[in-house]
Image (cartoon, rainbow, N blue to C red; front, side, top):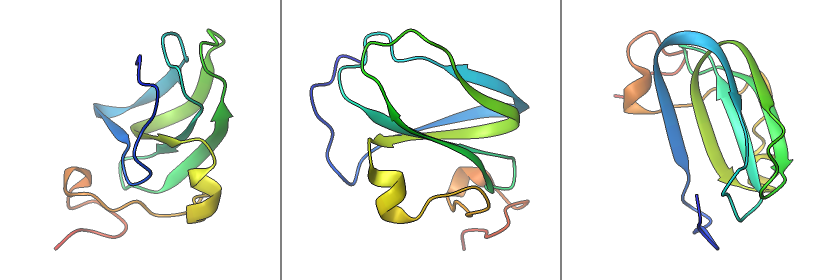
Length: 101
């Protein structure tokens, strides 16, 4: 929140204790973001591209979300992040579709 820019290789990963329905909004967020929602295994379930700065409309991530990655707007398309893609991160754990070594 309140950032005027973000390095292209940066982002924020939200990690929930267990899968749940989530919704995000852009209040106090000054830059457009892509939101990548993933299940407990790291499989991407939904991508919301180009969330509008300062918009308070809820962005529904759907059911069974355990991870949400926020990155610069347009980055999800550039990286090929679509539903079914697999995220890899140490916090995703052993149940991951693509575990870290």
